[in-house]
Image 1 (tube, helix red, strand yellow):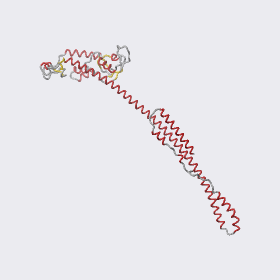
Image 2: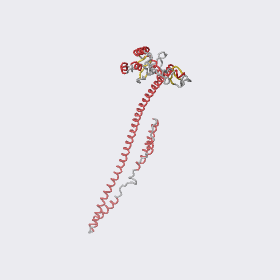
Image 3: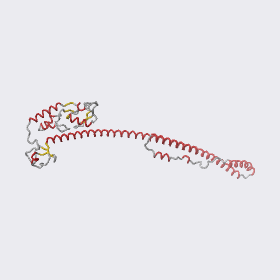
Image 4: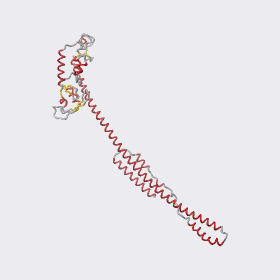
Length: 352
């Protein structure tokens, strides 16, 4: 607390000094003993203890039978949080300098005459000081207003007693509000932690979900490649068989074409003896060539590939039904998929 600089800036050093000696909790001059926090702010020990007790209701004070480790205390001026030891507020260091300044200030004030204008005056009776409090109208007034003025029928009380009572009430309200703020701050901290943990957990389950779907993609790609290879092998086998038949029929056709040309040339032979010398053998060759036309053929529906058709409707329904569940449900789903795959494979083997 920089008292010197504060006093220099103000034209009235005593008034400014009084402002520096006001407790931020009770809004009155510090009541000894005065404690100093690690953040260098000062408080009446009683005010500090009231706030500490409100913020730590389960803390046992130094005269209790149970010894605890202490609690948390938040400075009402700067909101700096202090971790108390087992002595609580009584473990804070006293600010003897501030206490000595308070004593000197009070001695100085008691020796100074009351300055004119330092006490509020009544608006109705300008020469009368406001010295009583109207409980009925809930406002300060003067004695003349009670005797002759607007507050004759009202209930009044000494100004000082009402002043002390309301300041005490306000101080208690401040203590409760500060304690409530500490509890709200604690809740905010807990909610922020909950927000952070929620984000971390969400990121983790997202990664796990992505990994599981990547496994499914890999399985589908592998199965797709496997089935395409099987279709390709079947296609190659059938094409090889058909191409071999085409080759056989082409050879037979070439042979028959040559026989036809030879037979036509023989028919053009004018001499009977020459014709008869080759005709019989030629006729025999043509008959054998005709018999050779009974080559292999493809069966009806040989080119059909429909037995490679897949019924994936149940798998599509299963994929659409994927949802978050227990591990047991996932295991049952996997078992059902394996049974369906085995059944599909058996059907395909039966078609082949």
